[in-house]
Image (cartoon, rainbow, N blue to C red; front, side):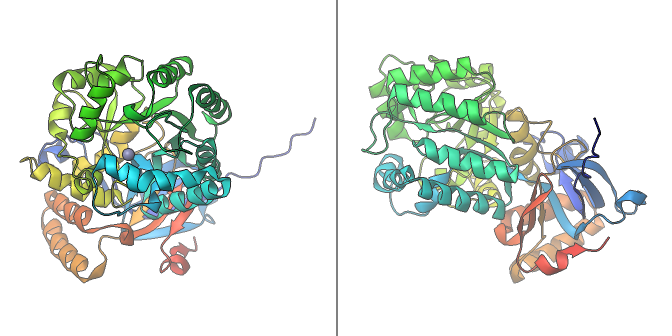
Length: 464
Ligand SMILES: [Zn+2]
């Protein structure tokens, strides 16, 4: 038998100022977080990437190994390189209804969302929707996501197929809803179970794809369907579970009427075995102390969705209180209840929600939560969230400032930072607050460029 040498693994070099977060800075003031080693700032560094993974991270002045001399260089010197953001709760079909006027959650679903989701029964609509949605995530600096499609199996398949081609880490699953939804958007227990098992067998664990048992929310599933969903979680180790909980006070009241024997809204899920370490529950604004104890005991996480909570008038999430009670918290856009796929915009909104409660959210805490924090909560810390050898090369390059106001503010912050290394937070906070997708220069997933700012495209690739 003759051995054919394998073709050399694709390689890439990225240059820039690296910022990542090896530890949770909590709600400590910036200098304390930095002293505790939660913030890692490595200006003028080089990342060497091979076969989709980070091979080495070193100062740019380090001599390059001879066999790397011809490797393409993506030159972002003087700009920020961060791990790609992880959005832990977002709805693919709701790009069609983002920024819809005037309703709270339950009316918003009936008026805007359900009619839009019904169109995804058509495979062509599902495929075009997945393409548009994933491209939009990448163009906003998000490289991994936990996604709601629609009730239609084809809508989940379209996402898996497109994400798989990009080697993107994606968590999704067909939505379960067998009541309180219009015609064309309801499944039934038997068919839904069949569809979920088929999706698990074909997609879970393949090409960075992971299946999530996806209960829309308690009101749209019968008790029988919730039991089936719990059995899926039990029988298929490693699958995730995603749903909504305690987002809005009218919703909480409705759940209490529908499930009079449940201790609370969260208990509707917990008693059927849906709450575990891989459970991602959006919102959780109106959970009580006992619910938080249940969340802590299971290691489940809340996907805090600040822009959505403000836009729909749902309430102010007590992030610090939830974490003090041991609940894991990640950050999410919840588009289309949220008004931007930009995790930076959502961090800005999260800051304002905390400010209204007398808490100051640092850039370090917000950025950690959307990178290494979410990776850890999803059980993917070895793969995502840090710029380190062995991790997948899911990276974004950002400009520090765009526009006259942004550039002016950044110049002032930069002068302060140059006088005192401890002032990096001032610059990073202004960046987090003022930046959005216009600041994005490039998005890499598994070392492949999936987005590049049009103005940069010709000048980005320097010769080695
Ligand atoms: Zn949602």
